[in-house]
Length: 44
Image 1: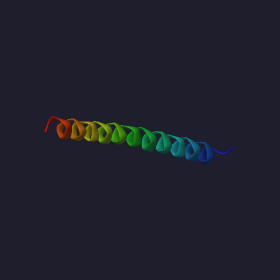
Image 2 (image 1 turned 180 degrees about the vertical axis):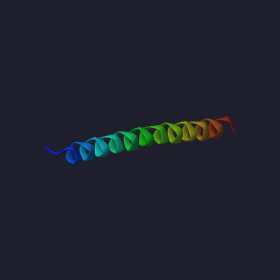
Image 3 (image 1 turned 90 degrees about the vertical axis):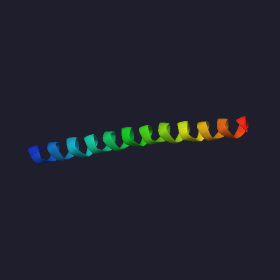
Image 4 (image 1 turned 30 degrees about the vertical axis):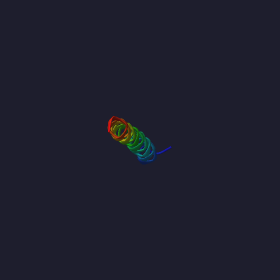
């Protein structure tokens, strides 16, 4: 296995993890926002 192949695999893996974490953080923000809206709706 060449060094470029290793670097490529590591780069793709890191990118995948980064995108996954970013997606999870966005999901949490969305969930919190939706929950706030639901609570506001029930308060009225």
